[in-house]
Image 1 (cartoon, rainbow over the protein chains, first blue to last red):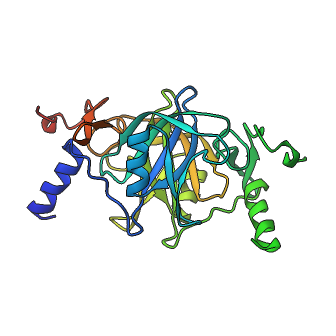
Image 2: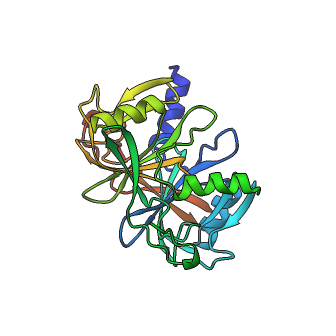
Image 3: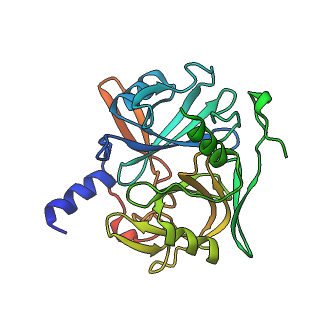
Length: 144
Length: 144
């Protein structure tokens, strides 16, 4: 590592300048947690515009990689995320937001996208449902 | 969306088959939270081998994109992460692990990598330190 890159690395990690490190697609990873329960609600991405809109509005905007478009969380569903706190990580390529989630964060209707546990079994690895009640779209509730 | 992709999407989202969706680099995003405080400790990546080793050993292994190598968390520092629970997200490209963190998760010495808040100011966006005490490497403590 050169002195120059060490210095830059130190600025990024120890400085107070907001300088998000976008990846090759222009995105940073964002983790949204529920400010009340602490649960992880979702992992998504923001581009520069989504980040600016989130900071300016206090509500979460994301960038959809599949739809290739900016997206305000809850714009159609009403399930908005009010941002209580935003945190930057050491190398400034990931952001943690604590939010007040209206309704459900997951498009499947669950409060959180993480509604399945991963467990080791004798034969390999299996998922099992946990906290998987749907808060909307009851017609599509999973049938055991 | 075709019927075929809908069916696949439904299996991935509603099924109990463990089928992580690795990105073009063979990685899934992993969020580690502190099982006691609920705080996000770090965001990192696992490849297939890291994921298998984590599930088999009950301690977190990651894949370092910068070093291009498998990495057991705490292998040199002793700051291991004991995995209490693993969760898969809806589209199986992100994993949430609740861990018991020995010492500090961040290489800068802080408990969490997210030791700076992001705040809007009149002139733009600034960071400020929060929960930024170092648990190791005191010689390098940030000097105001």
